[in-house]
Amino acid sequence: MVMTKPMKLRDVEAALRAAGCKVLRDNGRHTVWGCPCGKHTAPVPRHTMVTAGVVRSIIKQMPCLGEGWLQ
Image 1: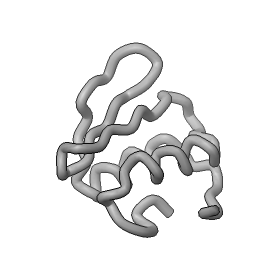
Image 2: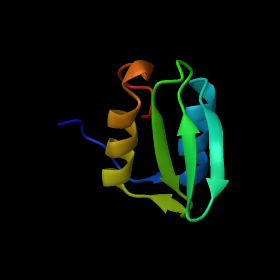
Image 3: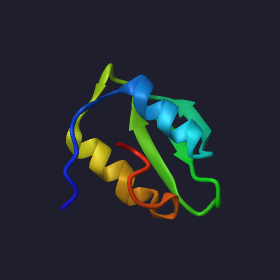
Image 4: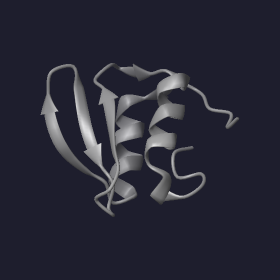
């Protein structure tokens, strides 16, 4: 299992942008991000802090971005 820690929302969003991801939808309680290859999506809750479990989930849902992109 990958060791993760809680992260600030702005840090998660900055890492997604740096990896080439784009916002697909921004309504409701989550922002849905799409990867550069167009095959994967990940919902990111709009909380000030994103929990370690959600960070792990985002990493799993974006396998095309490679190892260590969200650290």
